[in-house]
Length: 149
Image (cartoon, rainbow, N blue to C red):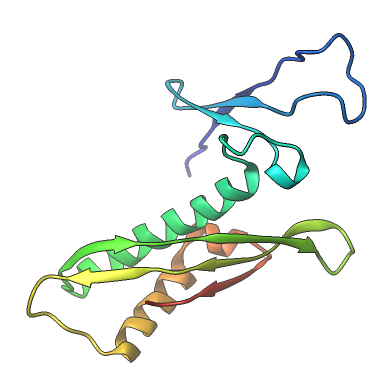
């Protein structure tokens, strides 16, 4: 199986590493070429203009769900024209009392070629299958909810 990697670089910008007085901002590099600015979530003092690990987790789940849905739809000969999602990672305390992503909500909207229709039940079943086969969903211990639009 594949090993997939990223590179992270953080450098201290202050004279000392003191509690609450340093920046968490860092660079994440994908495929040794695409660089993304990352930081803590804004509620934890991070820069709102940068992504944060919780958003990245929601993005990974949403992206995996999309790709799995498309693979299944292609096998079923469903002519998907577009797929949009709004994923939300919810922070809170888990059963151990630790801060964690306690739930991720996906809100996918799928559009098909003109003249093609599926029932709400068929669409729900396809999203359920996509969720079951998604690598990221199978990795997470958190609650995931798919709210179909």
